[in-house]
Amino acid sequence: MPFTMGPNNYGKSGIRLVRVARDTARHGLRDLTVHTALSGDLDATHYTGDNTGVLPTDTQKNTVYAFARDGIGPIEAFAERLARHFVDATPAITHARVRIEEHAWTRIGDHSFTRGEGGELRTTEVGYDGTAARTASGVRDLLLLNTTDSEFNGFLADEYTTLPETDDRILATAVTATWAYEAEPDYDRAFAEARGALLAAFADTYSLSLQQTLHAVGERILKAVPEVGEVHLSLPNRHHYLLDLERFGLDNPGVVFQAGDLPYGLIEGTVRREAA
Image 1 (cartoon, rainbow, N blue to C red):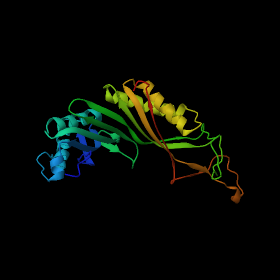
Image 2: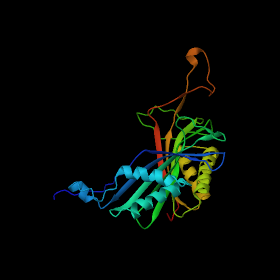
Image 3: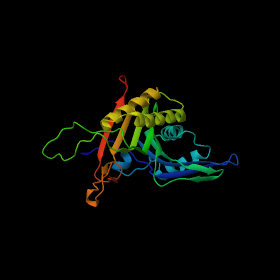
Image 4: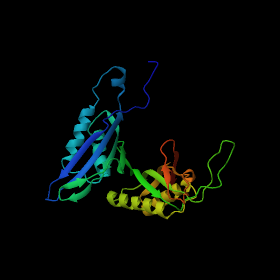
């Protein structure tokens, strides 16, 4: 055969799962979106359509719901349970990846909750190869903004540069952060400590660039959670432009801004321990 299959996987994306805990009159609520991806000895289905080794994606979806029957716990543990099951119970599958996003609801009563549109997600992705599980967790779309203590000066300027230097600007971003575990922690504790470190670093850092803030955030998470080996951060720069109000006969002492949309700067990087 002149052509062969390269790396490939298949699975079910966007499995929406809501679980209500009814053990007491004060109900609990978990709201997840689960994604599965399986790979292994699947050449036959690609070359000849022989589906003997294929676990249907519908079955994968049903497995997620069935496993939720007995509880979820930390999303990292739930993802690992699923990944191990898909590999250990399916002969043709040698690797499973399970990714989960948790949508946060705020309690307003014993059985009442509220959730705004969009907003921050807690995330995890677990890969299992039949021997070891590898876990990375984090947050997505965590909106942060500093109204001051941010500058941007001394940058390279050429014939196309129009951006003025500034010693006082709004710094705003929607953080996507992923931290990879080298050892298994108490996942809920580790998440709370990593998220707290992220927030503290953003608030405490006098920023001379968004790159400097990225490093400060990653460093703070690594110091706070010893089980983490590296932190990857994606920080879109949500620009806020000071409005010129002179045409209206008004000054603007740094109080009125236009929030930019597109395009935006995107700063990404990984901060890791030297031994990672």
